Image 1 (cartoon, each protein chain N blue to C red):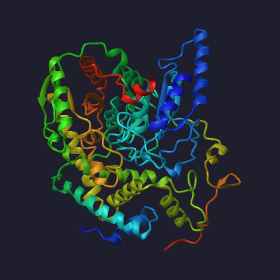
Image 2 (spheres, rainbow over the protein chains, first blue to last red):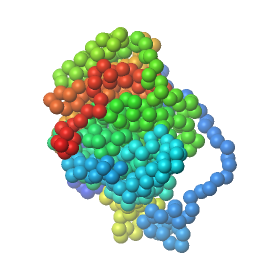
Image 3 (cartoon, helix red, strand yellow):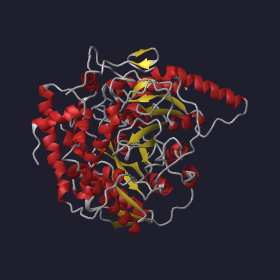
Image 4 (spheres, chains in turn brown, yellow):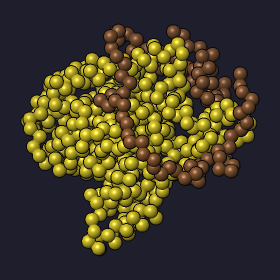
Length: 98
Length: 466
């Protein structure tokens, strides 16, 4: 398995993170080093081992579907960077990327 | 209360444990409790006790920044369940403590705001990520504190600051209102300067919460009352195979001395094997970042937190906001996690790590067939110097070598002070099976009484109180 700078750029896009070229190169170096170390787990035989997704003996936790008080609109918008007429405001999304 | 706040502020000049102190709120609560007392009303089990809270636990009255620029001005619209429980128990929350950004780090140096110093040596780190909580309790700025522990973030700073820190069983304490980092590992934990205080605080915040579907329904024993019941002749397991790696001579010596104290108290020390525990670091640093990459997707500049200026396209707004708002370690982990989950690599990294996690858990189950508890050092090294590891991610990650396997298995573990070496504290973990908190507290209390190592005073506390 070989990680390239191109893969790291693609990952940065998937993660919605902006980097300068210099930062990206540094991250690339570090990721190569770290993943190289982490690849050590591939030496273990896990053929018949189930993956751990959660460690609790709890399944399908349900609660009564009772209506209750929700956060008032002003409270929910209190931390919004931009709002208008009681809504979160975002830039235009009609021009899709790609 | 006034005196505590003055002391806390005096020490802040040296340590910087707190991102925010709330003297007005603390004094108002103290006044309210005093009125209650005058009327002969109950004030609760923590009535009037000053408590510090890590800044990744939501508080309505105080900003909750997680040590990050992206949440610099975030004032949560609700209190975490543990905050409600503290308030009901009469505790006085005096401030929010510094931490590594989003709890990612082992030294508190990854805080976007400033570095916190170790009260035992101001040139050294307090540990992390709950470094501010640990230093505040060690320096008597607060009596008790809450932190969060995903891979060791309560136990390691407790060890570095010479105090007691408990990470309960996964699911024992509600995570409602704890800002999520790695949801299958995160657990709120507690700090105190002695076992009875720690047991009481843990008891107050534990219990089922319908708002956290991963919280356990089992009733909470009275850890503080059970402390005095006899502990019996326990078998303590020592995982010698794991201790081959990275253990420094000072910590090794302190640990062996501590085992002798247990032996002297009538405990049997036995060797146990945790053959997969040494794979804990790679396993954890694939699983935790994978979960973090999903959890931190919410910081997008839309509903709360920082928004980058001047972006007219939604995707570039996301990228720029996150690029500006997150620090290097958080970005590194989001990148690692996104990679581990991405098409073509998921099976070899993320799923493989989940399988190794199963093997690590099974090692512990096997060990607990032979012994009642497991003891091992908390950190392989003494507290390190500021700046010593922060440029080298792998060496920083290795400082969690002994705490991470326990987190992956979801088990409860305490860190207790066992020695001072070169004037610096050394800590030991005591680990038990799921929901064995009471037994862990009892064994720790016995150790505390035998060793006399509790309520330690760092030199700076002696100096400034003279």
